[in-house]
Image 1 (tube, rainbow, N blue to C red):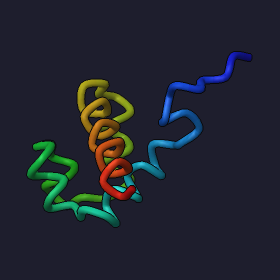
Image 2: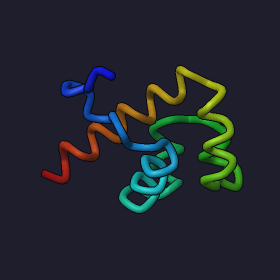
Image 3: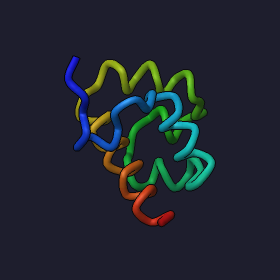
Image 4: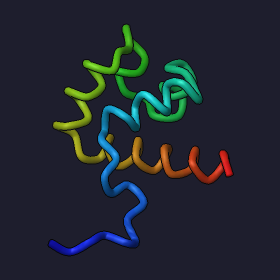
Length: 74
């Protein structure tokens, strides 16, 4: 198996990404930046996971937001 040295998301589960983003930004801010229903209408980790696993464009935006959050925390 090849290691992914240049992939900062390697080994981080989507659930952890959402949990960290929600704790850092909150659902309201996340819904403002990425306008998707699962962030704006009764948001939850479960509904967000279900949507993001089926919607590659939205997952990409969430992953990008997570990387920006990590950069800002340094």
